[in-house]
Amino acid sequence: MAFSMTGFGRGTYCGDSFTVKAEVRAVNHRFLEITFHLPRTLMPFEDRLRRLVTSRVGRGKIDVSVYLGSLAPGTVRVALNTGLAMGYQRALEELTALCGLSGRPVLDHFLRFPDLFTVEQETFSEEVLWHALTAAVGEALDELLAMRKREGDRLVADLLIRLARLAELTARIEELAPLVPEYYRAQLFKRMEEILGRPGIDETRLAQEVALFADRCNITEEIVRLRSHLGQLRGTLVAEGEGGRKADSLLQEINRELNTIAAKANDLAIAQTVIEAKVEVEKIREQVQNLE
Image (cartoon, rainbow, N blue to C red; front, side, top):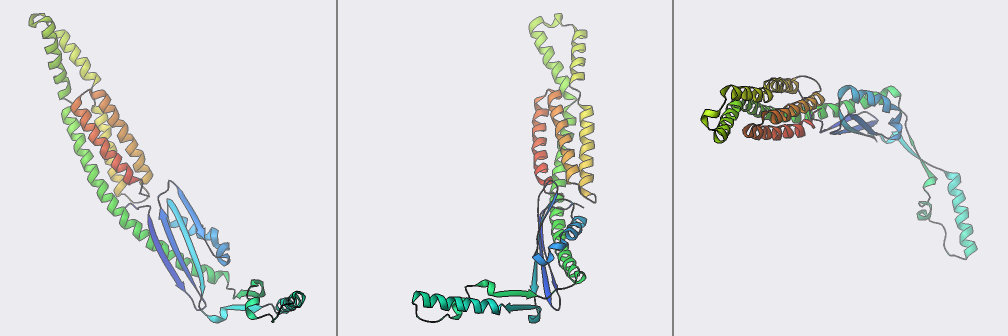
């Protein structure tokens, strides 16, 4: 079971006095990187929230936003600094008289001084706040993981089709490999016949040359390793847990074997098949970057 690294989740906790809303966004990243956007009241919980997210998500760039809202009117109180307000009034009246202005200070003047008011919010126990946080963030993580699972299933289905195509191309290379020495022998015989004529050809020498060539272009070991890597990659994609990094490493090994096959085989048909295979490998690599 593979998970995509992209997704989104939202969760909400509604209490008697306040609400907590959480949003979790995830995108591709080589490692696990978590960023929090918390209101001041909830900042002391950042480390505990980080451990919560880490226990659920293995890789990706995770953005967690939490919003704290109030339901009951009595939980928030706006207090007026009366002493400061009276001081402003006297200062405005003095300014009016000093400058010879008409009129008296009105409410609009005082509203320009935000320090006249302080907002006092009811405090809640750490236990109550943490319960609300885990409920909201936990719900958001559940939704995020469900989305990542659905996307991961779609990715794996596509990757398995491409892996089957790679297996077909590997089988074609395996079929072509034994024909390479025979083709070389025919071409070498034809060349020697043109130069020396039929009676001048040393059959023993010809056989030795063909044997040496067959040994140099033997790709049996590379094909065996290639099949093994393909099998491991298939197993990684359908297994439980995080397989993105392992899959990427296996793709590097597959690409390395294909390069060696193309270099050793010394055959146009095999080289063309290797190119097709490498195109599939590159497409798989692009998709694997999205897996956790």
